[in-house]
Each structure stands twice: as structure tokens, then as C-alpha cells.
Image (cartoon, rainbow, N blue to C red; front, side):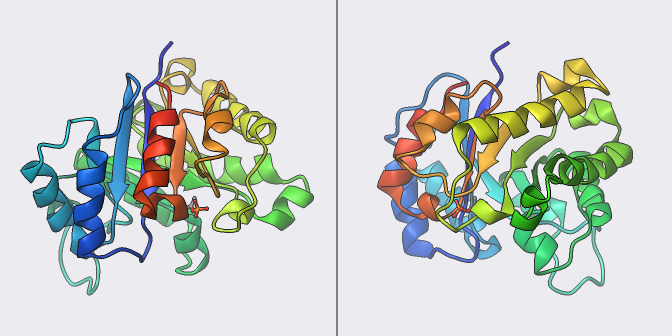
Length: 255
Ligand code: PEP
């Protein structure tokens, strides 16, 4: 089966209005393989600008807008939070949930991550669920245990049928922003574990879910990573801020 592939840009707390405008015009002339979607996730203040700039240049529908976080609540007294309906008003289709920086710095638990995934799906937003082990956990051979413990609460919260609408990004924490990438073989072995974990609950869901690799993906290593059977694209941090490099990564993805 040809799964859709996704290349998602996580700008984190970087970027500017100037980057929004230059990236939109650069992306307008990138060549994508069939079944590939590109999602750009800037900080909240830039979502509106990105949405307007992309409609001004008629960016093809293969390009979507994503947010980096959302509130699990619909509205109310939650200072500093952003709801699903607010994101939708600005043309957002995707939302990153449970990035390791949110789990470690902002102490988001897997229970909260599961609630956010539920809120995103209920509103029709496609969540990109980030999971991944720390270096100590990999050295202690706990990778699969950690990944299972991050996946199961989400499946328990939303049910396996709805999990078909989730995109999973496997991001080993030790590879994020460090320049240390998992080897293509190591990434494939872990992606295969994730797919088999889902398949043990529902095989038809497992074959549909796009599994993205994230962690120091760049223009040099993307080709080999994306050639792996269970890697359906990537979640790109640092390299997504450089239009030329990001375009190479987008073109390397295969659906
Ligand atoms: C990320 O922040 O999700 C990420 C993968 O970052 P980088 O590509 O810079 O490692």
C-alpha cells in the first residue's frame, strides 16, 4: 500500500515575518513526489501571515499549515493557551502534540498529550504525535518500553479507530538539534516496532498511519532515511528554517 508521506517543518520559537514570506514563495516552486504533503508549523503569531501569504501565491493544496501546540480545552480562563477553533480560523490543518521539548521543559505528561490529541481530532485537526526515547533510555535498551508507554495512553483515550487519523513522529530525543541522526537501519527498526505495536491492536490502522522520523534530518541524510520501508517522511527542525535545504528534503520524500 502507498501511504501518504509528510514532511513537516517545526520552526520552534524561530522565524519572522520575513521568513514566512520568503518560505512561501520558495515552496511555491518545489517539486514534490505524488502522495507527499508538506506542513509548515511556525509559532502562533505567524499562522495568520502564513495563511495569507500562501493564498496570495496560490500555494498548491499539498502544502498545509500546522501549529506547534494546542490547548486540550475548548475555551475559557486558560491564560496563554490557544484553542482548536482559534487555530482553525487561521486555516491550520495539523498540530504537533507532545514534542519532547514540551514533555521535558513544560512537563507535559502522556495523559495530557492524549487529551490534546483527542481535542485536535474532535475539531478535525490532524495531530502529529511525537514520541521518542532519551539517550539513557536507548543505552538501557528501554526504547521500545518508552515508546509503548507514550503510544498506549493515546490509543486508550481516543480508541484505535481514531488512531488512523494520527500521524506519528518518532524523534529520538538524543537526535533532536544535536546533529546526531539515528542511522537509517536504527530508525527503520524502531519505526517497524511502532507499526507492529499498532498492528497488534489493529492491522488495518497500522498500515495507514504515516510514521515520520525526526532528529537532525538534513539535505544529506534525508534520501537514505526516507528510503526505509516504514519511514513516511520527516519532522524537520533546524533544516526547515533554510529554504534551499528544506526544499531538498521535501523533494526527497516518497509517498
Ligand atoms: C524537532 O524539533 O522536531 C527536530 C527534529 O529538530 P532538528 O531537526 O533540528 O533535530
